[in-house]
Image (cartoon, rainbow, N blue to C red; front, side, top):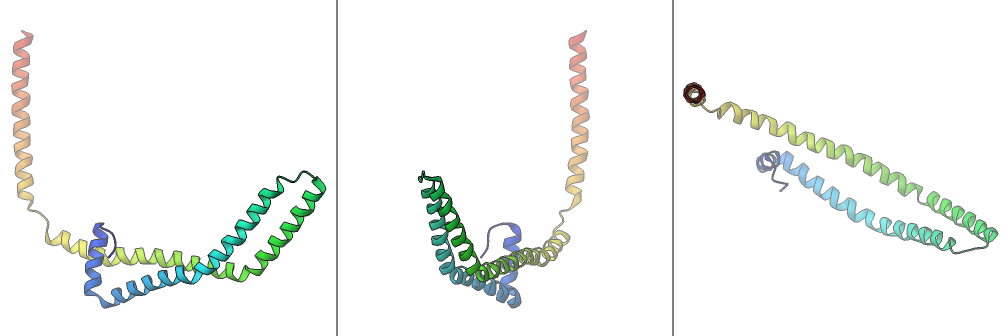
Amino acid sequence: MRGNSLIDLIYNDLLEKNSQLNKLEDELTMFNDAKRDSLKTFYNYNNKSDSYYSSAGNELSNIKDTVLKARLILLLANSKHKYEHNISSFSKLIRDIDSNSVVIDDYRKTLEIVTTLPVIEKYQLEHMPDIKTAADMAKSAKKLKNKTVKLAQQYQSAIEK
């Protein structure tokens, strides 16, 4: 079950009635879970490498010998470039997954809207309150306004005399 917005509530109701939507939701859930699980190892691996290069960069700030420091900067830059080249296939696949995930999310939200819109429109047509009550209140409000204004003006006139 998703959140508690009216769209979510209507959509959840539709999921119970529509096996095609329900199956898609199950597939989306499995995809998101699998995506997290399948990339977890790579992210841990990559985070460790990123952490190393960050730590090495911090250590460089403690080296006073400028020639030695420059050589180490170049050594680390070359190593990081080689590492980025080695993981470029992973990086491309992750960009592809992320790009497709954005489209999936956009169309999932679109699906929620386009499947729930007819439901709310049907509700609007079938449950429109009787206008007579509001019209009667509008007449009463107008009469009461006129009566109140008239009475206030009478009392104001009496004070001003």
